[in-house]
Length: 135
Image 1 (cartoon, rainbow, N blue to C red):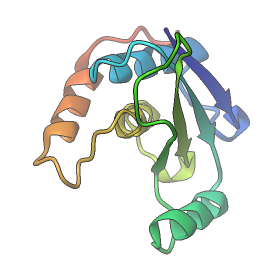
Image 2 (cartoon, rainbow, N blue to C red; image 1 turned 180 degrees about the horizontal axis):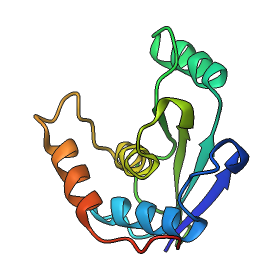
Image 3 (tube, helix red, strand yellow; image 1 turned 135 degrees about the vertical axis):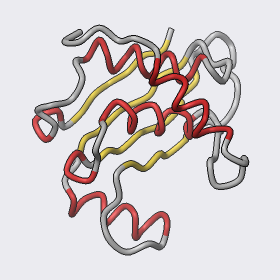
């Protein structure tokens, strides 16, 4: 089971429901064979994501989504993996569902900058799957 904590929801009034966020996270993680783990989704403002972008990527200005993987490996002794954090700036994001899936795919080890388009193709496929509105 994928456990998801959501922070800063007040900054994303149009965000998917907690149930939908969890479903999207579980779907993205499962696509990489990760069935158990914990992750956090945090919505932040433009100033905060710009600072994180500068500190961790050396890039100036805000971006839409950043991922911070933590354990990078399999769970041990039955303890769920600590997958990491996905930080999303709603004011920089066109589709919050896409940002969630994108961020989680990075947490489970995918990288669109080095994989010849595989991650983005998988992301597009996952987002085509039906998700009931308002759930």
